Image 1 (spheres, rainbow, N blue to C red):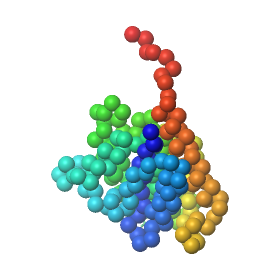
Image 2 (image 1 turned 90 degrees about the horizontal axis):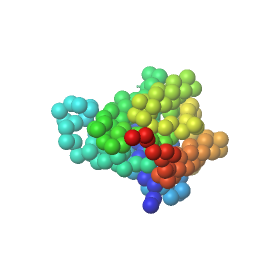
Image 3 (image 1 turned 90 degrees about the vertical axis):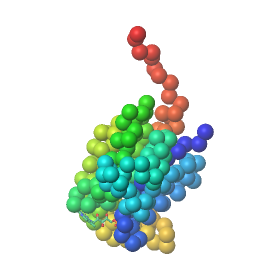
Image 4 (image 1 turned 120 degrees about the vertical axis):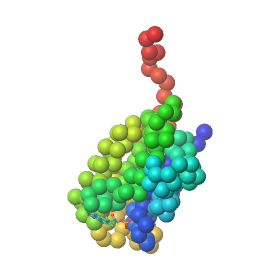
Length: 195
Ligand SMILES: Cc1cc2nc3c(=O)[nH]c(=O)nc-3n(C[C@H](O)[C@H](O)[C@H](O)COP(=O)(O)O)c2cc1C
């Protein structure tokens, strides 16, 4: 059975570099055989603030939560806005509260590959750390590699990532998510819990 990945992120800025990096990474994950359900910045922008009246029964939000429930792994790309995760990315993640009473709540047991962009290293790194903290709270497993990107210079040349080292990091991130997801799928409990 194919592995399913949930991918979300980007910014509403025209030509968002965060969105382009997420697209590139999601395409690479798909080339490895994963099915990727991607939610871009335009999608995130239409989600009402979580817990407001408009959020109740919101069909796009329900589709997002449904994909999260079915995901074997996750990719998240956030800009560093004032040193942390953007509101629209966080708001989407807040909707995972809908899964709190599921048998497998939040991102429980799922690997999560994290990408943070900013116009400087400081915000890229603090944002990556904030994302790790959020994923821990959601019971997910941030992959050992997270990718912090200083996007003060153009990242792409002719549709491709210009820096081979960055491309290699993003590919490695995908492999870590997919390998862990496959491992988690095949996992057998080591021991029965005592009665
Ligand atoms: C509201 C806002 C706050 C930002 N705060 C920071 C910041 O604290 N540090 C930083 O390096 N860049 C900051 N930036 C720049 C963004 O990190 C940068 O625009 C983003 O990573 C590039 O993504 P994009 O091309 O996908 O929009 C900020 C940008 C905006 C719009």
